[in-house]
Structures are given as structure tokens and as C-alpha cells.
Amino acid sequence: MKIFVTGHNGYIGAHLIGLLKAKGYEVSGCDINLYEGCAWEDYKKPDHELIKDVREISEEDLKGHDAVMHLAALSNDPMGDINEELTYQINLEGSVRLAELAKKAGVSRFLFASSCSIYGKGAKLDMDENDPVNPLTAYATSKIESEKRIGALADEHFSPVFLRNATAYGYSPMLRIDLVVNNLLACAVSKGNIAIKSDGSPWRPLIHCKDIAHAFVALAEAPQDKMHNKIINIGANSENYQVRDVADQVQKLLPEAEIVYTGEVGEDPRNYKVNFDLLYSLLPDFKLEYDLKKGMQELYDKLLEHKFSADDFDGDQFVRLRTLAKRLNLIQSS
Image 1 (cartoon, rainbow, N blue to C red):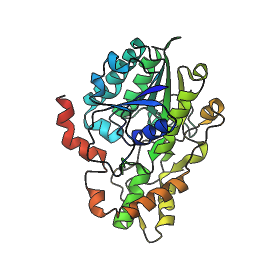
Image 2: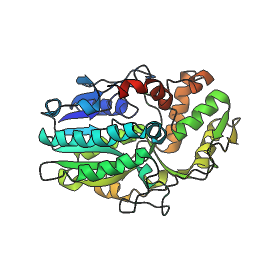
Image 3: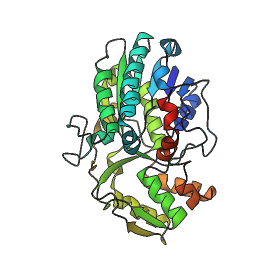
Image 4: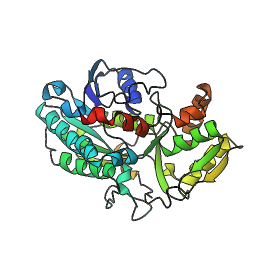
């Protein structure tokens, strides 16, 4: 299989390329390198690499590939809100254009990285793929609209599948600490306290970033007719947690760290607990490599190994929003 991955130099992409190459697949990668210099450790590179904006990918770039795995995006709610128009240009219009080009180029599978954040303030605490969505941000809205418009392209020759990923966390060679689990753990390691910006009550479904990569591979390898034009929540029922549960797990690793509720964001309107039964009915042999305890232990060990400091926590390298704010003019002018 020949696979085209967008965003291959990102938090999830750094794992995905390694998994695909370990399977023996020929891999092309495309990344604008917006976060060049943010790498924590070395990682596998694709066989063929394009350094370009996803909005500039051509039909010729995609020809000869069996599948596209589309990760590239302004990748969470705060980053989406920094410039809503740009978020829609990249996450929505860029994604739909890419799917249209993939279809023209004869690519049969298109795997799209969506998000459970589209559930927003969930109408109930067991949201499945058939429940109404409630996007509260430009990022979430861009994902919903992309699902609709790319889904409309599906036919017997073009088969999209939409991965509504739970909230990512965990070690990656392209580490991020602007994600709830990573942020709380990195804060505790570097500053000695566990700073929660909400009241700790909101629910989040959590998944290790490498398990998202595993899911992309599993869905690409599954029979196409089983996955055709499906929307699938990616995670596990056992991996739904309240934010305060995450803080408690951090405190088990660092008993001396005090939990501090800063209250700076007030009540967090995003509150969603998610049902993942469909994933395991479609892929009964699929299993997550990590639960929260295992994933946090691995990241904790890595933070200690790298002597992660308060300067690292407060700097730009591991916080995508800070890097994006500094480099935004680069992508606006491209």
C-alpha cells in the first residue's frame, strides 16, 4: 500500500510514519513545517517528503497513492480561535479541496482526523456517533463541516472514513504540553503544582497520541466496505475521565505536588463523555496500547529524562499556540 500523510511532522504524525513504515508501506508525507524546531526527539521520516501548505497540494502529488491520511490542521480549540477565518481556510476549505483532488487522482481511501470536541457541551454523558453535535469553537465547526462535505463525495470509487478522535495526550517525539493531561503533568514536574484552570468537573475522553496513529493504520487495513463513509469515535469507554481525575493521577506520580484550582477560565463549557462501541464492533481485534496510567508513566519518565524545566513549560517549543502566534504571518502570506 502507498499512503499519503498530511501533517506528518506533527504530534500524531511523528508516530504514524513510524507505524506505517514498520508495516512495510511506502509513505509520502506533506507538512508546511510550521513547527520546525519544536521536535523533542528524532523520529522516522517518510520515503517521500513534501514541504508545502496542504492547501497547495496538487492532483499530481496524490496520484499513485492508495490512501490519504489527513492530519494537517490548526489543531485544537485555542489555536482555531486565534484566527477563525484562517481556521476555516485550512481545516475546512483545505480539507475539502484535498478530498476532491484525492478523488480525481484515483485515491480510493481518505481517512480524516476529526475530533470528539465536536460534541461540545454534550446533551448527555454517553455521546455516540448518532447523537447531535454541539460545536463551540471554530476548530470544532470546521471538523463538522468537513465531515459533511467530504462525506458527500463518497461513491463506489472514493471511500472516506472520519476518525472522531478523543482528546490526545502522551509522549511523542513532537511533544506538546498544550493538552490537558500533558499540561497538568508537565506543570507538576516543572513547577511543583498541578494547576487546573477550570473547576475540574468537565468530562474528557482521552487517548494516547500513538493509539490514534494505531487507529489510522487499523482502519486503512480494514475491509473498505465495512468502513465506507463511516464516522467513528476513536478511544475507549474506560478512558473517559473528569479533569480532576487526571489531576489525581498526576498526584500519584508526584505526591508532593499540590492541586491548585486557578479558576481563570471559569466554568468550562466543553463537557463530553463519549461512547466508543462502534469502533470495537467494526474492529473487534483493535485494542489501545495505552490506558491513562501507562501513558502518564511513560511521559513522566520522559520528562525526567529530558530534565523538563519551568523554562520549558513557559517557553514556545512545546506550546503550539505560542509558536503559531509568532509564525502566523508566515502562513497568512503563503
